[in-house]
Length: 205
Image (cartoon, rainbow, N blue to C red):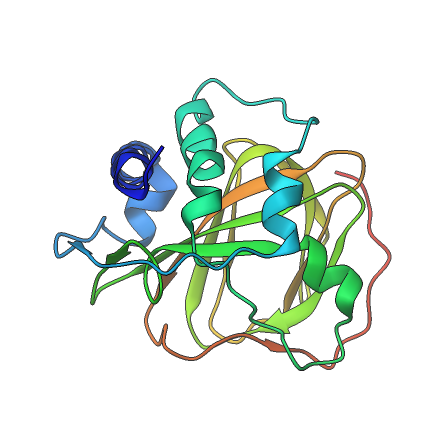
């Protein structure tokens, strides 16, 4: 399957979910200036983890988007946000993220950024922050979401986590993988950085 045949369905299913979910609609309107752009595929170990993942329990509401994200994986430009930091190869090889709408993605917009995030079971995403306001929508699986000065919460398909500008947050998977749609608004040209914050003791919700 060529790139065009995976990216167009990816855009359509992304738009459908964004328009249907009330919290996503309230966070940022789906951009009307979406423009296709060339993609240079850039695989990484996590893309293989995702395509070979056997632990999916797709929610019917988000199954089409989840599968479109997975199908587009071999053609995507996978991001290495924390390259040259001390986060370690274990995390870098397993944490997956690529733009759907944004730099190096198949589409661009001046008003929003849309990413996918994949984490296999038993992976910890350390505390980090960024100027952009962010909304996570869980599409498949489950993860523990942590925010500074807030209780840890286990989120599953259809649940959202909102992160204010520069508010430290973290994630952790247990026995399930997780696949998320992630949207940014405002100041989205500044990448995330790791926060000087210790890992908390996670409480199952």
